[in-house]
Image 1 (spheres, one colour):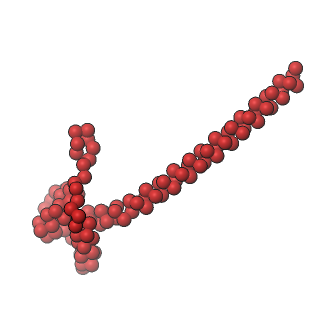
Image 2 (cartoon, helix red, strand yellow):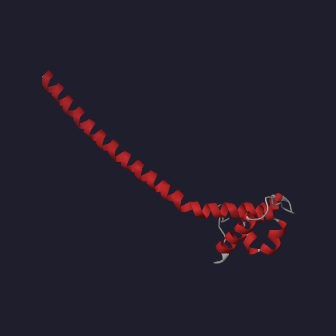
Image 3 (cartoon, helix red, strand yellow):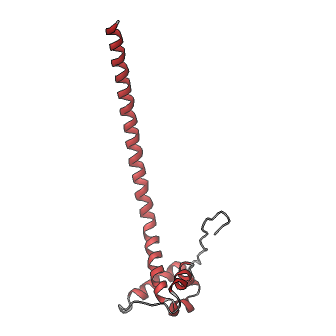
Length: 126
């Protein structure tokens, strides 16, 4: 983290994504037994979230397999879905902007019509 509290993500090695996908495939095709962590689960999860499953795979894979499996699956889903999530948000923003423009145009028309009615009322009262 930086001094202002912003999270700094570690720079990824160019082979990190292919390695992560290979590990994910290897774990997903393994027998259905749940992978377990040899060290305290909070330690393994912390190390996995910091990228140790790829930077220190020799230690992490045998000792923190459960955390690495979860982290790699999460990373793969995030990487696969991040652009589609952003595209959906952009579409929603565009829709809302159109609705706002339409509402503003309707409001302007209604305001003009009200002013015309008020002017007519003033003329009739005179």
